[in-house]
Length: 231
Image (tube, rainbow, N blue to C red; front, top):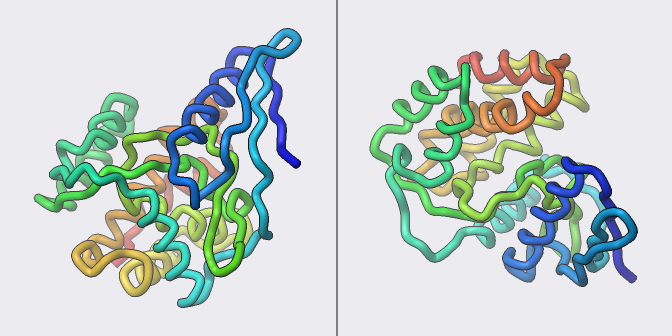
């Protein structure tokens, strides 16, 4: 059995076209495979393989390790880039708009660190992840990109869980998530940058989603999270 998506207006058509491109290029052990993407009625129809497993939030050391292994499977063998010259960061600058100032602060705090290029999911919420036989898989890759920043999505499920499910205060969430990143989710050479990675992950969510989403309570929470001290 497979799973189908149909779109017949501009924005949804763009999203499922991007998902089709991602499913053709991501490694085989991270998500569904593309079955077909073709014209159908007044739009396009995307068909992908069914993804096994069930939702399971990474909230223990064992699950954190599985989440980190998932992110490592997305890293591309292209070497590393200084953070200020990384293709993803350069693209983020182009879209940052009024948030460019805070982006510059985060990049400056990351210093001369170098980071690999990786496939990125774009919306790695708990609802878009399945636990299957000791590993994580992800579906709904319509917001994905092929030149992402490795490990940037390590805090993404934790941010969404803290904000949308638990309703934690941004300051409290920032410190807890930074601690989890440092202890479990980031390689040792990046552990000291845990607060900056958490900040950059939330900032990327803001830049990517607002617009096209209208400002709402989540936008306010993410903004407060970006501005909070995570140390």
